Image (cartoon, rainbow, N blue to C red; front, side, top):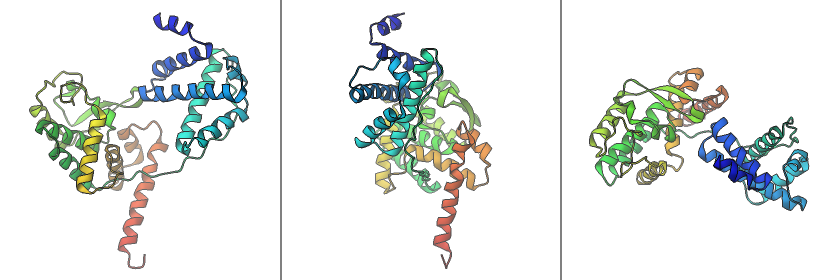
Amino acid sequence: MADRLNLSKLHPTQALVGRWAGHLAHDRRRSVHTVRAYIATAHRFVAFLGRHRGEEIGRFALLKLSAADLRAFLADRRASGLGASSAAREMSAVRGFLAFAAEDEGVTPQIPRTRAPRRPRTLPRPASPADSLGLAEDAAEGASVPWVGQRDLAILLLLYGSGLRVSEALSVPGAALPLGPALRVTGKRGKTRVVPILPAVREAIDAYVLSCPWPIFGCQHLFVGMRGGPLNADLVRRAVRAARGRLGLPDSLTPHALRHSFATHLLARGADLRSLQELLGHASLSSTQIYTAVDAAHLLDVYRHAHPRA
């Protein structure tokens, strides 16, 4: 009720953006970061239209936009230094906002057609098994407190051994203990999947739990910070960055690169795309198919270095 009262005091367009935020968070189950980014884009878009047209932009004005309006916004964002991938994401957010604005008025969305910038196709850069394990071990050795080192080792082995996203690993509850051969995790948009837990990963997690000064069993989070609260993902990235620097590894070896390495190494060992799709939690097979290109790139690299006439 309080939210409705607050929205009622806003300008109609601002109130519309507020309703869209609620729709994204509750109906579409978007992450907090996605909602924040999309709402910022909507405010930016409305502000630009006001400058571009020289008039206040109301709800009904959003239903009468032309392709030229969208192209002008895109050109403005590109002129400010926005890259192709980021600009494409902004246009996707704008289209979603305009579709919601139309549905909110009870009319069929008629969004002007305009071509978004073509995103450069980049392949994930997997790390070798030796580099992946070396990174995890060095991060553990570089920790200021022994139990924190055990924690970082367990997290990084979990990312590489099970192909988890950092957010998925940090959301594993303490109630998941004791771990078995598999673990149910919650991924994007609340989708759950089952991933395997290798014996080495399970041993690392058990060692962390035994050394951790905070109670873990039955708690909301398996991996905790120095004060026993939820662990911030930035601390994991910071530990990886420090270990990467000490080992002289490339900047591309991030925590998320361990997930790419998991996928690439499984595919190289004969895993089929459908199984890999389930293990990674991809909504569509097209997201998984990029790893076939990664594997092919690796084979070509081996060929160039090994063949006498390459």
